[in-house]
Every structure is written in C-alpha cells, then in structure tokens.
Image 1 (tube, rainbow, N blue to C red):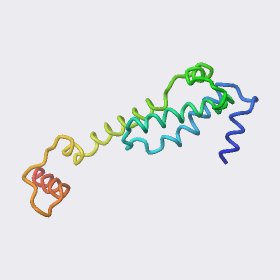
Image 2: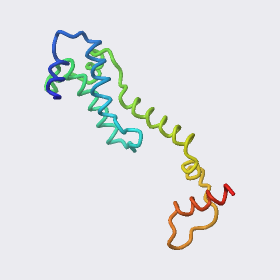
Image 3: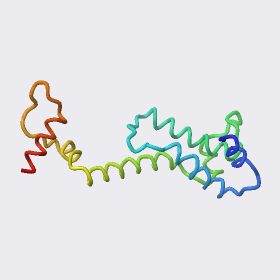
Image 4: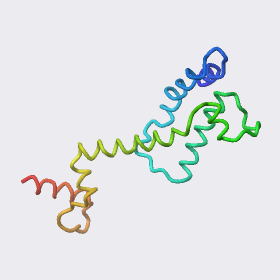
Length: 136
C-alpha cells in the first residue's frame, strides 16, 4: 500500500503543493500518532528530523547518494522543519487537556499527597484515599 502512495508522491502529474499536503496529511499523521505521550530525548529528536528530511527527499526524488545538504532539500521543498514542532505542540496540548479535566493528575503535578506513605501501599492508593478525604 505504501508503494502506491510512493508512486503517487513521486509522479510528475501532481504539483508541489499537493504533494506537500499529501505528505503532511497522510504520512505525518501516521508518524506522530500517539506522540502526545512520547518522552523525547536528543536521539528521538534526531530520528524525527531525519524522517522529515527523508520525506522531502522522497517527494523531490533526491537520492541520499546525491550529496545534497539537508538545508538545500528544505529550500527546494519551500518548507522549514515542522514535524518536531508539531509533535511538541501536540504533547503540550495533551498535557493541558489532561490537567484541565483530571483532578487526579493535577494532584500528582502539585504533589498534593496528604498523609505519609504506609508500608505496602502504593502512591495511587494514597492519592485515592486523600481524594475521598478531601471531598468529605
């Protein structure tokens, strides 16, 4: 199935803007699916940037052996690095949504745990107990 999309993106029948829209809507949406909960380190950021560059190179039919710098690829595509920014914004919006709608998570972020941890109890059990105590 991906080979069919690859042939579509590499054909000369579709203009550049349409190809870019196809990549952003069909390929990137699958690539960042569930990225709201990812923890990104330097290695993951490097991989995401490499995937984005690879996407534009494929669209422009630039082989990796052609020795064309990444900056030149982005200039030819008339784009800037967006995929990592999109992923980070999705994560931030997910955190905001979670904090607005889940009191349990807010208590964890604030460190609002009442009492002390007894032996054999988990922090979630203590938070649930403090939540019930706080409501009454």
